[in-house]
Image 1 (tube, rainbow over the protein chains, first blue to last red):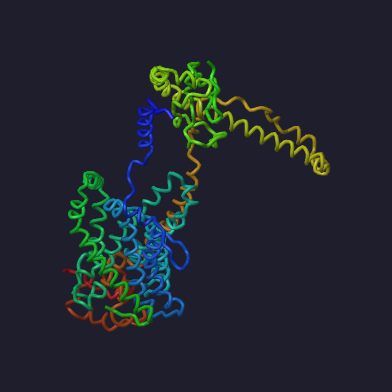
Image 2 (cartoon, each protein chain N blue to C red):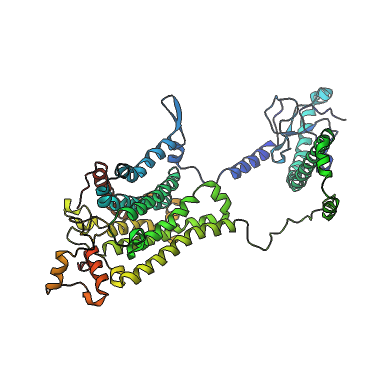
Length: 301
Length: 271
């Protein structure tokens, strides 16, 4: 067969066209690894599915901890630790929901993005359960309405739940289709809820701490600062807020494009440590109070 | 010398104005790119111009002698070299032309398919009407006046303008769903605000805004006495000089007392 004489130019052009057809960004290696399958109990499962499932299960913990007291109608438990278990759980879930986007900015991985929806859904369920149980069981004057709106902090909490519940209803793909371009602005009301949570906690516990009596569970380790919910939320929100600022995002993208990912991680390391430290206290309290609630032996402290 | 075009080679339509194989004895075959050795019609339904490639193949049997003649090979290569730049030059133009005409052709095909479908549907409907005369009888019972009231539908649609239809100036269809979602948020919030205003009017500003630290978060100490029984702590507060809460006289007496009893009013944290 004769050697193609002028085909090299065409081939070069074809390869250039193929290069243009390629996606602009290469897939993150972790994402690629997560997309692979593995065999488990005779069925083929994606690593990503398994990881998302395992990370999503703990979101049900607050509801699980309170389930026994609700089923057995144990008013003592519901009255004493309901707000701690479901309220703290809601706060933790809101923080987790808000953590996903900065984490994508920081790591450029996307395999955990489905968790944002799941955490948001469980947050709405937990907060609604908190409001319902608080309206039924707490000892505030004024009946159900008084227990929901009788104080400023209660009113703010009620407004938060009123915003969260419709967001829960429109969190499915059908609602997304029906709302079209309005879906995202509505979902951005989560940021309003974030701000209202600051107000709620400020009105609930004040801006200070009271020698171990204000922060729940601080009676056990005598470190009231780390148990103060407002401080916990502030510490956890700081990196989340920072990584949402446009100039910061641009800087991170520039550094990552230049291959200086280590510099990005080192810059955000102190904030990440702060986040992890305070979030660990939130989780610690949730587990402590939650287990006590599940055992129907609520702890005060 | 006309060359016999092999079966697998692509013969472009006239409107693309591809250059016809030149009678040079060295056929330049325009082929759709696909693995060699696959004969028969291309599996692609649309011709992909971007995958078009020019390949110089071996001379056919009828000019084999000419190729084997002394200097024939050099001459052929020279000819190919003369022809290929022209082909390379024309390829983008052809590609551009094809991509410009592809949407129109696709739209025409879709229109044709829709028309065929409508025709088949009408045929089925006609068959149904002829097979079930009862339905036509029911239709015949409709008063003639009502039938006459209906405006005659146009048989044929007016030709659509070539430009895409502009969006209507009104609100988009998602607006209604958005309004529903906003209403679902606004109504409970409004209810909460009204209820809070009522609470404020009933119990006073001090009760509504301030509260005992920790109340609602974790119940501290023993449960509270019922509102009807004033607690001992309440009396002590009144008696002692260190009563640092708001004076009971500053609010309507009974309501303030109930507020203090219910919430165990303590000073706002000073630390």
